[in-house]
Image 1 (cartoon, helix red, strand yellow):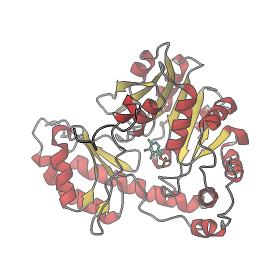
Image 2 (cartoon, helix red, strand yellow; image 1 turned 180 degrees about the vertical axis):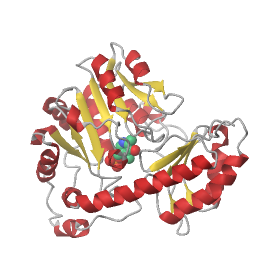
Image 3 (cartoon, rainbow, N blue to C red; image 1 turned 120 degrees about the vertical axis):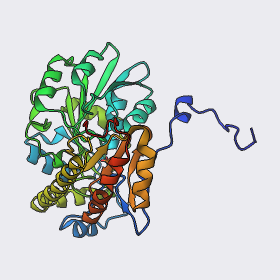
Image 4 (cartoon, rainbow, N blue to C red; image 1 turned 180 degrees about the horizontal axis):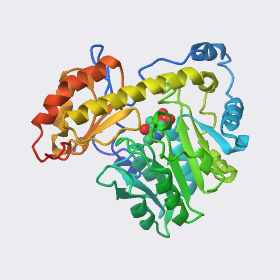
Length: 368
Ligand SMILES: *Cc1c(COP(=O)(O)O)cnc(C)c1O
């Protein structure tokens, strides 16, 4: 060990052991970045002007982003204190986990799901408990309910699930909530809800009145195309959100981010047009790939999941060579964001050969 490798100070071993945060790979100018589920469209009409009008850079922002909370409270028919704004919904996840779980406590979630969950739990000092996704890549809610124990403090349900794109149905969710202890915090992560087209999918906000232990998380990063400004929101009971406020780093939501979010909410019609276009592009891509012989879950976010297993690295490399930067999860699968039209066209040109090159009994291939 060289002098430089030697630890300089005593750090928490579980923090040192965390994998460094891996952002979706950047793409050079000739490639398409399909690795972070970003929106291929720029800001909605009115956003650039609203941000430009916020010029008091010498002042701290309104700590609670009241104007944005008022707007969201109205949209969801909630009290303004039932809305909490964060610098991205990942910040809200961190706050809620810190508020509810510490050393000795467990946070339960389906796996594979959003990459941020394990490290946020570890940072809180709590322990992750993972329940395997079903064979169809969806959450196994009965198994999750069975895994709840005396030490469980938080359950995270992700619908549509990142990276598999599957939804939890309303019936599945309600059956789950019926058996979950009423003093256990359930977080429903709806980062991709705007892209959902399946009628029986769960939709969190109308359920809040029935389940006081439920908090719904949403974001402006995906459908609204504001990933770069960092703004998301939590909806739920005031006492839970107040606890999250207590664990938050104060003043993290800038006035510019709040103004952009408000302007985006005002452009609802344009938002719906874009979302519809991306969902149509997504469904068309899924249909073509299915007809090519792929066995991939019906996508409900703005991305596809290819369960390429042992072939993940080689398939991701082939896509990369063709100018598509995707998100591989070694030995599991590949997540591909629905981006520009040309990016999807390139994918569909390649995907026929890629599926034919998989072993005959590969799970990402249809049987027969
Ligand atoms: C992208 C994403 C988020 C939110 O990201 P922010 O940019 O922090 O709002 C939350 N949950 C899931 C599952 C996501 O994929």
